[in-house]
Image (cartoon, rainbow, N blue to C red; front, side, top):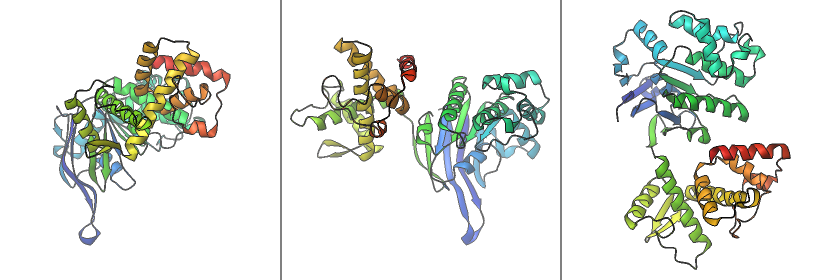
Length: 382
């Protein structure tokens, strides 16, 4: 892999002797240009320290940080400041906007420290995040979500190749979280490299890769393609159906057309990441694998009901193919909306039980005005 960001045995140590604390303890990894990486882990695991090192806000105690071929340890303080302003854009949980400056002036302030201010470019950055209409407002006149969008515009105004985000939605409600993640997704599509610290599992799933930290070390660093994840889901779905009908010998390959060699390879990988265990040649769910299988089955069977009951599609092959697609792409939020729209059905059109979700337990009812919006959202994903 051609590295755009590379850390080589990086350590950050505070204190000495018995009081020594290794906030980052020998981390090595490489990131491609345009990759989105989520740094995850519990509090105190070293996430923010690692992000600060990548952002050149702090220097490693040992090891090397190379960004786009530049060894940052070779740069003087002024050179490092210039490199940071030209290469990196920062988005923090606390928005760090200057209270007496307007949104536009806050964005222009970042230009001032980079080179020279340009109001047209600053307005363009605000427009990119949908805040050009609020350019003259002070931070106190903006909601939390709006302030974060201004902060993202400030990070973008100097056209950085890398966006570093530290819990960028930590102070936002669910609706504004979606807006911010949509903006980050658009930046990712533009080819910018994103390194994001988050504790949110759903946020982590948006990234190309997740680095799970524990006590300053990478505990897990796994990357799987969409196709590989689809294979995992199909194996989990197959195992779920096997538990529902123990009288039938499903075999390993008849349901999803895996060869025995493919099945073994996929199951071995799934065992390694904790989705299944294998005893005497028989695959069994782990709690993690069972939860993921339940979600896959629920999405598939709800989609079947949607196509037949709401969209009046009764061609079984078409319904099955469409449901198979939806079982891999629908988010938990859209799945719950679909379930609520359908009235929390107990079974699919063929009589197989649909696993219940939180929305079922709470007995949510979808207002009629929202139903069309849900259908449009589902249609946009199809």
